[in-house]
Image (tube, rainbow, N blue to C red; front, side, top):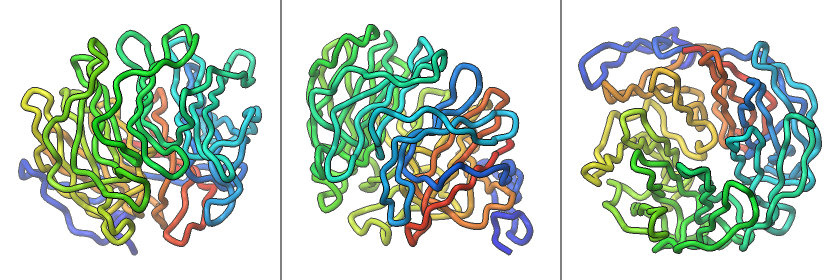
Length: 366
């Protein structure tokens, strides 16, 4: 029986010397099924606690880009059909706006990348057109700044990485250009820092066949400029990046130029006070393609729920990962996860190493 079930693996020590047995970090249970198999979709928790699942691919080999959506019940995880988006999207960004609507940004479509955006309104349960991006983009970093402005940075335009960055004001009147990244980046990650700046980390400089980056840079909204900061210990793309409660940024997994054959177990944290990356404890499993399934929990720990059959939770105090128990029998890439109001997490969809999609909906209980 695999270690993820909590039945056979030995306890593991944290950086502080405490012992973490499998399952001590929480449990993962299959609770429901999506209406269709999906991967590279988005999962957004709405103000009323429901989770909006949108787009993605729905056929093996990540074919069949869809415009369909589903709404997950926070109590049961059960799925019901949602309204259809105006356009099919995979590898798009979904941003919950302060007023409660969800903005879908860019994404891949069959044979192309789109500059379109659209808005989901929970009050009407319908999508409407949003302002167009200046440049077609898929897989950008899309983050709300302190004043409600949306920053969209980097990503793919076609299958080429871009250095451009755009801003959308809180009134959604239109995108405008801001300072460009010093390096084109796709398959990168980003986080909002405590002082209001944004950091983007790693990625690939030219697309899937380009150079994987160890570099990082910060964006200052006051000046509209990007500034290089220190490098990570290793180059990473298709990584997980998330802000911690103490102001640091956690960087998890990813891979080097060998892609699936160069996946990492390692993780590191960025401290904006020192502008330095520091290695932390390793994960039990190597993983990549995890950006949609890394979630900061209510207690400050971080769930990493994709890329391996062994979900793990990072404890920022001890600097170590603990294995999650439960009935996860296969690890999936490009899954999507959403934190619920009760502190649990729904994790859904993804594809395995053979690019076979799943319809599973899992619930993580800390």
